[in-house]
Image 1 (tube, rainbow, N blue to C red):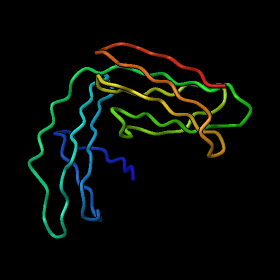
Image 2 (cartoon, rainbow, N blue to C red):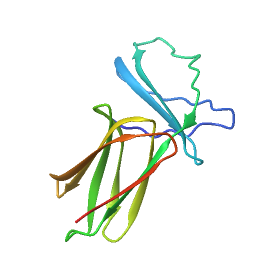
Image 3 (cartoon, rainbow, N blue to C red):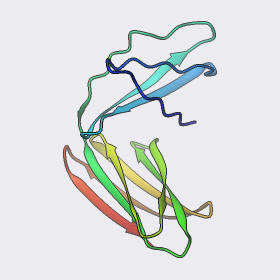
Image 4 (cartoon, rainbow, N blue to C red):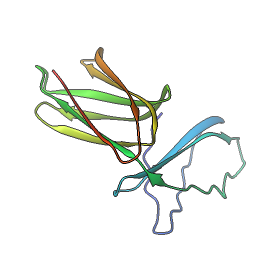
Length: 132
């Protein structure tokens, strides 16, 4: 499940209706800083608060699509875990900010896995890949 929640000016946010379990929380800013906090425990009736996140410079992945279908889906995995996902329309590019680590970009057209790229990312680097 990927829910996108916008924070307030001081970084506060609220997510209601979550099932119990462990969750990963990713935060990112428009200027390319990002943090991933893994394994946050959610239990029924228990408020999870006081989470402090320190955002740091990230690497930028630009993913393009030039194939036959009108659009495709991109998944960006960091160290084997889905960090971000989104769509990309034929002839356009989508941008993803990721912290340093082992990154895999997976590409799907009509629900079929049609390609992937792997790379070790470093701070403030830029990588671009175009799928056809």
